[in-house]
Image (tube, rainbow, N blue to C red; front, side, top):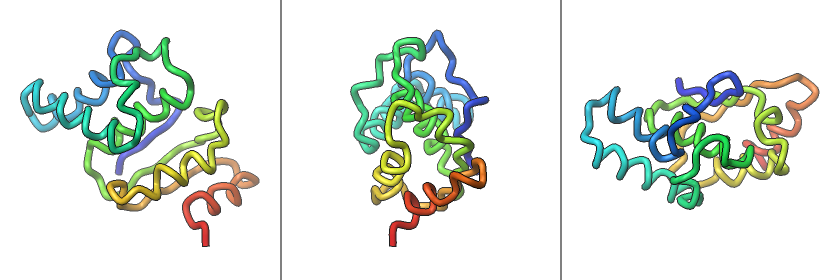
Length: 130
């Protein structure tokens, strides 16, 4: 399982690219060049390659969420858990934002969202639009 949550912060002194590249660098022992390539590719797949040089303090909430999401996705786990996305995505209509990200072919796997029960209908629409 990979997790995206408000209590899992980015390292503020590193760029989005570096925050993501740390995973393959230290967990899979890839070279820095290969780790950076994987992180750049993932940001491009998410449609947010432009955030690569930004540090946490310079990001919008949606950009910060993308960096956290990419950091979780690069783990390659079949299950992604998003904890309280509304607390992280207060600057965008987050059910639509999540739906667009989850619908991409490269984002296959199980996405689960945990939040207050009264918000569950929003997420059911986002992840299961039929």
